[in-house]
Length: 439
Image 1: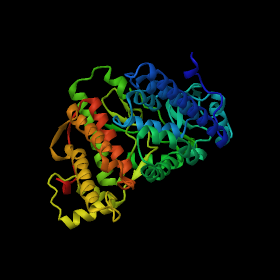
Image 2: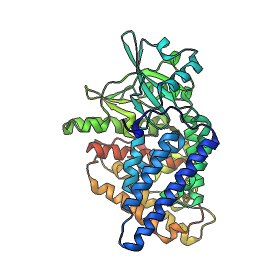
Image 3: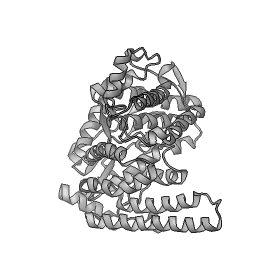
Image 4: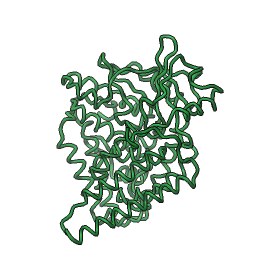
């Protein structure tokens, strides 16, 4: 077993320990750049592929040891396929499935802290090794009588280090995302708020029960039962859901009808949350879903939930209508309310940014404009990536002196792009149900 997959015996918890780890990683990344530019002297045509691979490996290894918010940000960035070079996408995607787990003595310590006893006293069996490890916590399988449970344990120090970790990850994010500081700071407050909620396991259990009950009528969708007497602020116990993650299930070469059925369940799940509940499971990455033998989609993690403010919902989705029949003065007000433009802008900037965001939202809304949509259409995703590349390189956008877009849009955009990406992986054709007012 290599060091990279060996269980960790400890985790840096204090701000000083975590900051020191970031500094050492920053020095490694700096060294990689020095090596790259030295090689460029000899070979001016040298691409940045090797540099990206070295940096992605060093940053991921460091973040996976620290776990918590910094690793979660890496996972979020990997979900957006045009945000990072492929080396980073490939490496950071591992945060969705396979971060190095913590050793069993640390798991026992957490149990004793909250239950006054180890897991072996609460369950008949409990796997000493994690069956899955991600950014915020790891999962063990347990049994009691004839019941099997998934027990999620949060890593030590994750909740208390959210704010300080985000400050430490900021320089990496600025460099990797090609954002200006105003944009990053504008969104980091929203990221911090969601991450603090994600470390509150009591809140997660409450939301999990609420949303799963509200969505229980949706065809081909299933949820685990949650057990509050076996849960705590840092431990969640739920039913063990047998099945395969999306990547594994696709390797079994399912029929097109099966792909469509799973895709439809996903679409219907998100449709109901966004347009009826006005709160949404805002972390649609493959690690949060299990596909079961009977062709049902199990939703196994509600850590990240975004509550959608009514005024944001109304303005945002009014822009997705196919025929934008809104009076100019009303349209201008929506752009102001959604923070796409402001009084600080010149008339030229207002015109430019209105055009840009109408184009972006129109493209995002394309599946809503038809009765069914084929997410196997890679050309649609190429249009999205090309638009993102074009806009990020345009002079007007790069020189903007302020952040663009309401912070509430960060997780809504992320949710839809994450959903679309999952449907693209499924190569599914979907009946794009929509609210009556959007038809």
